[in-house]
Amino acid sequence: MIKKLMLSTALSAVVATAALAQSPSTQGSSASAPAVQTQGSGKASFIPSQKPDQWLASKFKGTDVLGADNQKIGDVSDILFDKSGKVEAFVISVGGFLGVGSKEVALAPSSFDVVPGQNGSADKLKLAATKDELQKAQTFARYEPPRPSTTGSASPMGGGMRPSGSPPAGRQ
Figure 1 (cartoon, helix red, strand yellow):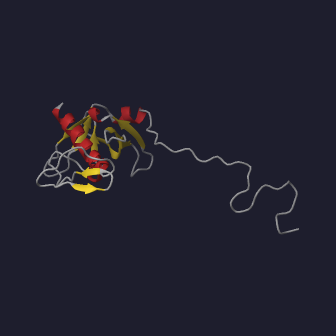
Figure 2 (cartoon, rainbow, N blue to C red):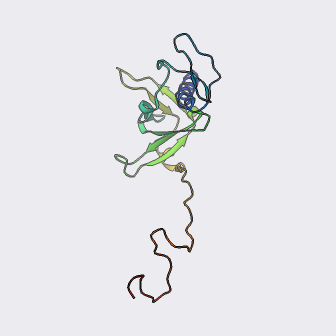
Figure 3 (cartoon, rainbow, N blue to C red):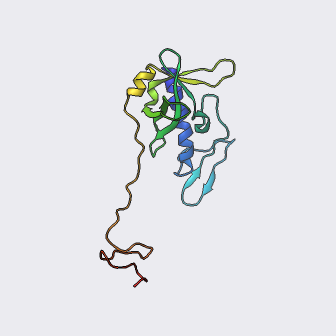
């Protein structure tokens, strides 16, 4: 339970750090990290270094995910977080070979336990699920903004609609 809490806290801190550049901070500054006044956004609170219990998203991507039998069942392909910086899910790529034929599933951070790496290897995430269970799970759907609809108006290239059977413009 403590490992889950530490992982969630660490990842939330990593993501929240990126959000600090976009939103004003209400935290005070420390002597080792002086706050810098920015125009119209309040005080900036700088983080001087990464702590041992924190993960960088750049290093977290690709982390092995182990199943209940301690065998690799996938890896982290992305992290889903909301506008406030709260980590909502880890997107896991499962199945396939070298990314071909794989699918993505998203699981809440509380679904994972952190397994420390051995002999200097990277930490891993462990699930109480099997590879088959993940492959049968609903595929994660990435948000795609709606595309602008086209109407019957002329295109920007000047190739508007013309009656059927009439020659193209300039070829009469």
